Amino acid sequence: MPRTKSDLAKNVVVIAILTTFALSTVAPLVWMVFTSFKPLQEVESGSILPKVWRHDNYGEVFKQVPFARYYMNSVFVAAWVTFLTCMTSAMAAYAFARLEWKGRDALFRLYLATMMIPGVVTMIPNYTLMVKLHMLDSYTGLIIPSAFGAFGTFLLRQFMLTIPKALDEAATIDGAGHWSVFIDVVLPLARPGLIALAIFTFLGNYGSFYWPLILVKSESLRTLPIGIMYFDGNYGQQTNLLMAASLMSLLPPILLFLIGQKYLVKGTAFGAVKG
Amino acid sequence: MKNRHGQFRAAMAFLAPNFAGFLLFTAGPVIFSLGASFTNSNLQQTVPLRFNGVSNLKELLADQSFWLYFVNTLYMMLGMPFAIFGALWLAVMLNRKIRGLGAYRTLLYLPSFASGVALMILWKSLYNPDFGPINEALRHSLALLHLHADSPQWLQSTHSLAALDVEKVGIAPKQFGIGARDALILMGVWTAIGGNNMLLYLAALTNVPEELLEAAQLDGASPSRCFWSVTWPQLAPTTFFILVMSIIGGLQGGFEQARIMTSGGPAGTTTTLAYYIYSLAFEQFRIGYASAVAWVLFAFVFVATLINWRFGNRAANEI
Image (cartoon, rainbow over all chains, first blue to last red; front, side, top):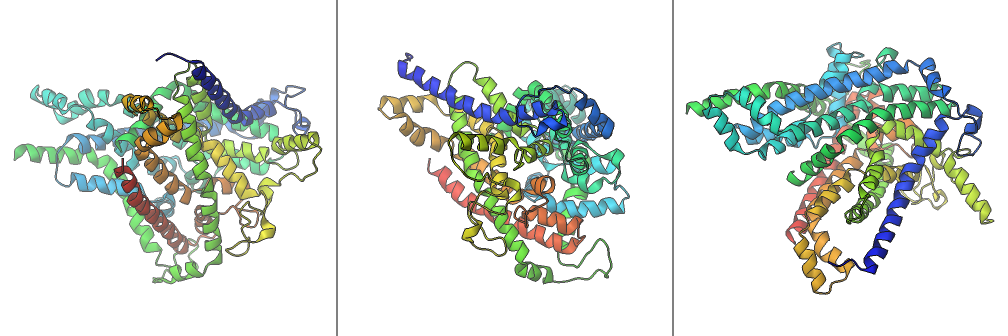
């Protein structure tokens, strides 16, 4: 179709509107960056750019609170939850998508049904369970209860359903057992789904707030969101340091986002379209 | 059949790790929580554990706070249509074939990607009525226009644009204004508008058949007619999915905002049901009553989903 003048005009309008939205999205983040470099007395001054750039703010955060520890805790917990979730979900998804057995569909519906139950319903009994198991205030308590979500099983099952069954059958005829069909045939083909699930799970748990909030008592176990919350509560007047800390906590997700963008777009679309 | 039997055993083996976790941390707790909601269970266990029948439910129906917080929860869901239609609008624009639009998508997606707590701490500073940049900018603009008006108190004000009464369920005209609840709604729309919903709409838009649009254009349909008569019905399943997820999320929402930004205040105006359950369970240790409230919340979610399903399926069938 020929491009007309009115098409060009429309494109200009579209770009203008999108730019406005993009600017209002980015503006608060830009304010955050500039504020994180200001000396404290400049925070309330109203100018956007710092007059004096204080790079020490970042070092200061590490001095006032064990920020490196928070970082490590967040990454450690999120990495373990991600690993366990991907592993157990992929195995369960294989059973739901590739194997025939009695009660399969009924059990899958039960899995789906639990996804509708609000988190707060299971949160309270899980907390009492942790108390009974003496897992309060421990890494095990932070990791294990989060590692078996129905969502991962659901996402990967949907993904595995699209892989042609003939591949399994060919491998079985060649003498492969279920385990090797799973490892050598299905898993490699389900890789985009696995990567999307891994990113979702990692981010969800990296930023997780509720569970660590009720579970963690000692400072050495605080994850970033909890650490930053207490930093805000205890030293709340230091807006510049608070912004530096928040900004540092945002870096890993932003990096992960830029790397994994294409998988995420696919994964998001997939869950909804096939769901 | 031997093969069937073999598959059943294999299936159980593959399922076992996930299913064990599912039983222990999801299915078990659901049953436990339902049971607890009929007891006086209390973490401090000063009174002996006792089966209470429906007395938690009775208390809840008479609990003024519960209904106020329910209204708060509903009110704070009013940002939803803006977030959904905004996402659709942005997706339609991003769907045009112009170079460099990918960069816009990335920028718009950023906030929904960054973890919640850091952004909420950021917005708490932005909303600071005395030296936050929002009021700073407002004061400058008002001065330029030679207008005299007070800047909003944002998170510190009990007002709301719907003039909701603070003490009982109802309207109180003198409560009209911009308050904490509106501030949280605005922040929510900012976070959500370029997020997953926009991506879902983008994916759905690429699936709208070109032939349909071209046929409509040949018939002389205007662009807006093309959109509402061709594209919009094709998007119905996506809209339906987004609506269901938003309502489910909205009814359970508001916890982080309340815990980090407002402590549920001022005067309980930003306390949602999710935050109420948290404070009942983990600040007052009333496990039994908190479980009852959680189950009533679940009932709301369930009913909302059922209603959606009824209307959603009808809308989807009309294509």
